[in-house]
Length: 400
View 1 (cartoon, rainbow, N blue to C red):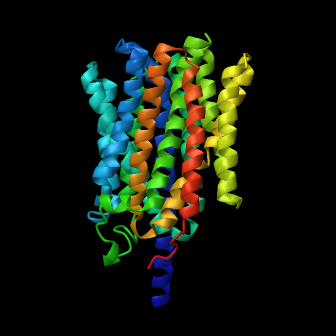
View 2 (tube, rainbow, N blue to C red):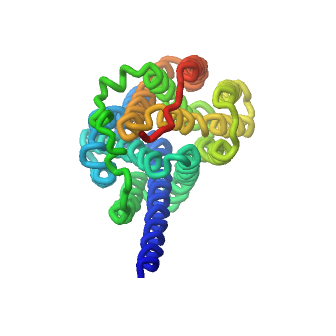
């Protein structure tokens, strides 16, 4: 009888762990769908509200302001109310934001909705990554890469699906409603999961770690600046693809393809990064160099096919960098994954807001290609900060 109960308990535990993995991967994949659809439709939104290129940059930045503020303000709730409750709350905020973005005709309401989506997006992704880090600690490097493969698959499908739906008469704002409905299903499924380390690992020494204390860690600050620059690079490449091909190249039909291939190329690179063990420093330098060469090459070659290939190569280079920084953070701050990974999400949001905003101001006074030259310069600075973090890094792999 006891053996039968143990077998049932073990089966239930395995099913629960599989459900956590499924919901985590699928949710992060849907975040990829949303962000790429937003990037694809940001020009449509700017045209709908009659905005300038600079104001389009503000629209891009606003969402990432929501992404940057919410993890710093709410990340500490992971160890107070638990990661599961926090995720459910923030996914609900995101769904409500998508509902309002889809139905409103008022620009101010649209802005508030985008802020809400950004806030929900950041805390959901950061805390969901912390769930994977805490529940599957020994395999987190694999799970952070594979969950980001799911993100990239979603981001690959997003623009192509959006383009197809819009071509068949779907209004671009209705896409928010469809994506929100899928997240609503994920909320229901996530309520069914059970977590062994929902409020951390129970070590009083690390309870309620403040944001200020996190900022005293030199390695964490260097990693935060690195991820700030990385997301700025990724977001600038992606958000300016549509306007670059439509306004600069007169080929709007290529923008969805370029954006999808940029995200799609991350799939093989993230998958390979999850299964092949390469020295992190060499991998980071090599992939960053590929981004640098690709964004410069995309601007210099006149052939549209070559430009598309360069966009794809830049995506291949980008793929493993975000998971690498998050994995390094999780291993260095294993006792406070919820708070520290949310801090990384905050700096991700800041980078995603400020670098494209800077690029949009420059583009408004020069040419579209300037956005990508700025991106190349940021790549070089990012390498310097990551290498500095790598020198200081001494992973703390113990749960104790």
